Length: 111
Length: 115
Image (tube, rainbow over all chains, first blue to last red; front, side, top):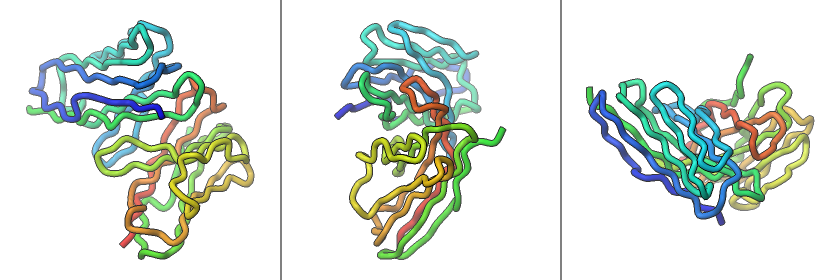
């Protein structure tokens, strides 16, 4: 079945620094969705990318969908303490609607 | 407007007992999903409803798990003869139509602990 992998599993960042987390799918995705889960909370939808090579920005967050629609990345600039949490990518395969989630990248920030 | 709600927020039960977990989706959303999240993992798909019918229950781990959505709104996930391995956070999500490009909105989850 479809597998979605995320690296790194943990990201320890100094406040103010930039970092990138990566998502790779074993199959082609019709779209990729990113969620953020704060400690003790539930996944909250951030963004969806649909087109091959698409790039979307939300303030300090930049999301990219790969040309082959099998990978994606999330880049955060000038990390803040509010960025703490686990970032999940998820996507349905081309012929399926079920979301397959990666294991997430858990971000901690050093002030 | 109101988001997805789930009750109870926490459930502690003993091995072998029966539990019911409830999900109230966003009003007007026809698609409803159940996921299970274990510690340190992403949500894992269990079952998907389109209206009243279970369109896909391929994620249910075994026949101890069952879910219903009799009126196409509220859904109940039922677990019989609970086992310690069933301990996890059970998340419910809903989306407007269930198409692949729909955003799924998650509820706060029910944390199930089986002693």
